[in-house]
Length: 225
Image 1 (cartoon, one colour):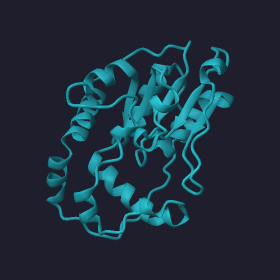
Image 2: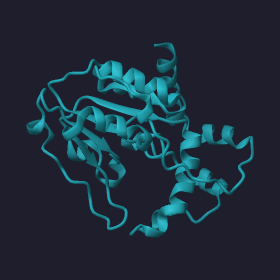
Image 3: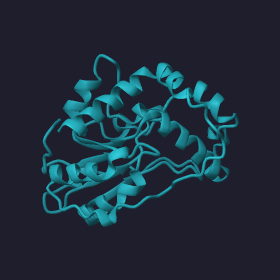
């Protein structure tokens, strides 16, 4: 992966339901006034504000832009900041990610403007018909042919939700910031009220091989480095 360049702004890609809310307080503490956000408003349908991050960034006041970057919904990295070149993200097992996203949107979606985004089917049918909301947040389109190159070229570090504490320590080391694990929260956990057959994970993996290839590659790098 690339080395952190303090002369350029940092983008932290918050993959939904992958500990972005839990880790956000740490990035806020590190970057203080330079911490900016990039979030679509589900309540009123307004797009994220575009910041002039390259003009604003200095070594004395470094910029960290944190948020959802969904290219399928036209607020991805290339839609807003195509010149950006250094990123951090946290990934989660795609099966657990999709399950968590399902129950979360069912819980909070009654406040959303676009009600078509709220799943109406049972969880099993949803898993059969939906893809993990993960790779569409990456800085470039991801394929089997390029995913390793994208990770190595654009990312300073990719954390893993299942290893969140050690992930944040590695991120702190890469950015040369002190790490305070007491700031690491646990937010937006949603109760699950439907059972999922124990053998259904294998079916889901077979349906989404690219997402699991990316996750497994990042997981191995985290464990081995």
